[in-house]
Image 1 (cartoon, rainbow, N blue to C red):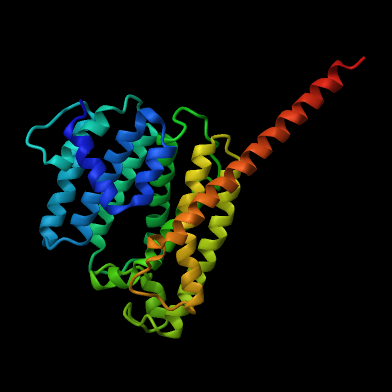
Image 2: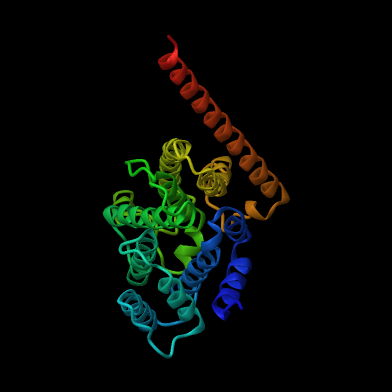
Length: 312
């Protein structure tokens, strides 16, 4: 019998992201699908409380401190009483994590660090160093989470370009949401840049802000290219497809920003178009064919090599 945390987690995921829901359904390891929904649902709920709820700053601080303490206790093997339904989702998720310092724990703790940062950065300017840390932390969380849920146990290569696709996605995410974030008190342009060009975060149509957006788009494009090189080296097809889907989701936003002359919109709705789903399906097919072709070529090379060693 399915427990109530699965029902809640699936409903939250379905309501917020159909692409994430279907990624889990078709790409995640079969025994980890429910935990994938739990992970997404818990942080979707927590992020909404921190970013968009009407709670006061003090209430947000108390909320994130409660979640930090809860995660520590859960990873110490405790099961606190009086949890909210969403916190029970988290408790069930962590109870299934049997490895010390697993990819799931990295995902959870790094995502919590992002939440904590968002609570304290609201209403203030952030530095370039903080912005870089922000993207790095998110990229580690997403990459570790993806590789925990897809191909769990596979020895994924750990190299410099491992997290770059996720980093590119976060850069794009901050551009996509910048107008809404600014209205909610989250400033995504570093303090040093604003001061150097004598502009404010609301000057989104100014040449200086558009120039900054152009450089961020250029950086994201570069990271996506490098990140895809990493994906292409993976032997886990499902992870490769999920990674390419993740890239495509944000590359469409970059294309729109470029076509708009680096003027940011209040909303980007490309994912809701039927054509976006068709592109996703075709992308999965293309990645699969390339993967199988590469695997076939590797087998042929190996067979030729064996033939060379056995010929008299």
